[in-house]
Length: 368
Image (tube, rainbow, N blue to C red; front, side, top):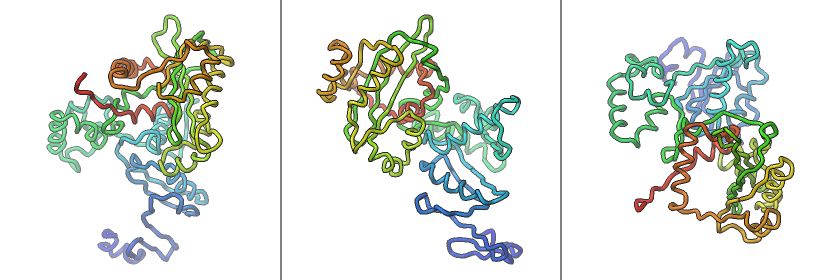
């Protein structure tokens, strides 16, 4: 608005109002939009600027704006952002599309889209943030629009205080991270490897389950290994009550509905998860995939009737109670963290696993 007011040429064509800019010659409007996608249907968009999409939790907001360009012959959408700490949302979706496009440039069968031009400035490796010869990779304007001495000051502060590192990496070096309190960095947990369990044909696996009450995700997993292969492979399924799917997707700004469409999350009738569906999944793994499951770990506070039901199918010796405490989980978390960082845990690039890992925080017991 200030730019228009300072330009006699622009003022001849554009009328600045309190909350928008109007142009009568082509009946157009330029205005900021609210973050509530539910109120924005029916947009007719010729141009849009999406700022700091790393903070967008609502993918529907992105969809509404993009869908609003469908009747335009030459729409333009600009997305400007640093990296951030919100995973499996708009930023990751566009970043991964950009990655596919760039990697496919020299591949005749690679991903192509002439309507999308990604430009990414980032460090190649997380550890490069301490090397000032690498800084310009993520800061092409360093020394002009961005002062070198100011960046040096921020880096030195982060070296002295580890709590400042994640914000520095996302804002100044465009490295994707998890939340400030997260257990693992995104680089440590991210593994794009996939597998086909039908081709691997494991003979047995070890199960685990975390039952929810009414609103949380219920999760079940079976892990297995193969001879002469150091990797741990993960089969997983998640459940959410059908009556809460849309509500949770809208309120939490988490794509539960998309995950349900992808088949990596199942819904159950009503407003709570009936644990018989968890039992059915374990039976599918055993009977349809032919994977013997001798042990299944569960939270010892789990529903007694479910444990008894599972014992009826898998045997009384199969169900192993696991205490959810710092003493029991400390060592397994350290081992799992090391294996994840080494890409030894293949969770089939499952979006929910990745989202859960990125939101896992640690609480350090000073007595241990």
